[in-house]
Amino acid sequence: MHVEDLLRLESLDLTLLWGDRPQLTREITGVTATDLEDPGRFLQRGELVLSGLVWWAPADDEAKAERFVAALEEAGAVALLAGEETHGGVPEVLVEACRRHGIAILSVPVHTSFRAVTDTVYLRQWGDLSRRPAAPYALPENVRAELSRLLADGTDPDTLLTRSVAHLGTPPAYVLSATGRTIARTPTAPPLPVRRAAEAVTATTTLSVDPDASAYAQWHLHLPEPVGTPPRMLHEIAEVLAQHRRASLRRETTARGRATDLLALIDTPSSAAAPAALGRALEACGLADQDPYTVITVKGAADNDGTVDALTEALHHLTDCGFAVGRLPTAEPGEATAVIGTRTRTDSRTDPIAATLKNLWPTLQSRNAKVPLHGGISTPAATPQTLKGALTQARYALTAASSRRAPGTEAPTSNLAAIEDLTTLDALLTGIPADVRTAFGIHALGPLADDTNPSHRMLLETLDVFLTHNGSWARTAEALHLHVNTVHYRIQRVEMLTGRDLARLDHKLDLKAALLCR
Image 1 (spheres, rainbow, N blue to C red):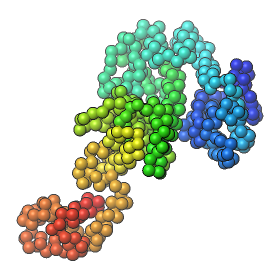
Image 2: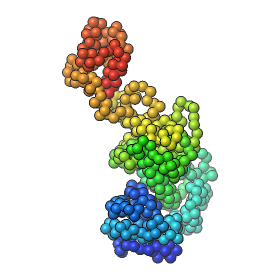
Image 3: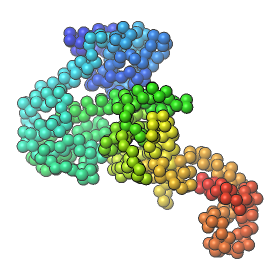
Image 4: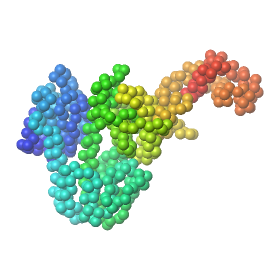
């Protein structure tokens, strides 16, 4: 379907505000509705963008419209459909911005709903499925027609899968997520445990439904028993499921926009976000009545855009928990954050959310082993007003997880850390940024921080052993094979060089922390 096709539909009553032949003949691959000021990161190439223009106000300058349209161009959007209801028309500055960036812009009258536009586009796309030529071994014509109707009606994945393989005798079949969640199964397919399903994803009898999706967002068609079906037919069934998957991804994209707005409120520089605004944002994300809340922040590779998909897939494994996944405005590249609503409070000392995610993490990591995934989980926030503190905790735990190192290696382990894990001084210090730890170690140890000096290295070793043995002179001497008087001399040297008194507990803790920060 092309942009110009929309203008020919009297039922939509759209008006072309600007667009030449090259713009109007662009093919539409999907539709996204958004009212974000910068929607670029939530768009896919070839999409039609619907906007009610809530993000714009008459008092805004021209640059705001320019930034919005530039984001559409960079993301590869084919056209902008702007609603007239909010402002009684489409601002001229927006039309001019579209003209400069080569984006066709159409106005949507008040009596035409965005849902009508979306349904029109997808009905036309799904209808194409039933009109494909019936080549050898392809799905029968009547099956394609039925599946097109089911897609248009928005049927559930179980029904879609069952009808897709019904003409084959309805063999056992599954649609599995990247980490082994069962998205759909036929009535003949028994329940599949997550661990076995995760293994089945890599089986030779499994076909990727959407190969273009990230490693974490892919769905897989799995037939555990050979059915003698021609490969082309299985690929057509996978394509039908892919149509359904893309529709769910579009809904996720819209939800991520709302989540990003919520996270921006939580991370507001002021002491606390306005309770009313925070309440509305939680309600928009479906989390208004789901306190206590847990915050999780995950970081992948800086140039990898799959972190949001990875976090979303992981959270789908939580039962009876709503969640909203997005990106903080201040987030580093490759970082995603989520607010999880738990609905129930627990007196258990072990957070069930953290326990579930830690158990899943190795499987999630294995789906893209080249990209380390680190995550940090907060303690539950009892009220929306304490979400800011939970976000701070999650970020701290993320830093701790990223700083952990595998035994005998210099590389950090791929891990997930919860605030509840930070129960030792060593664990607590790992959450402090590396530069801060280094600076603290240098200033606390004074001249001893220069470990290129052999004498200083000897004193540091003695200090470390002395503190490890709780300040026992005799046990320190025994461990180092020294005379007790030698230990006394060396500790006196440490005290002189650092300005600390190792008879005092607070000074011992200072130097122990400094050693851990080296």
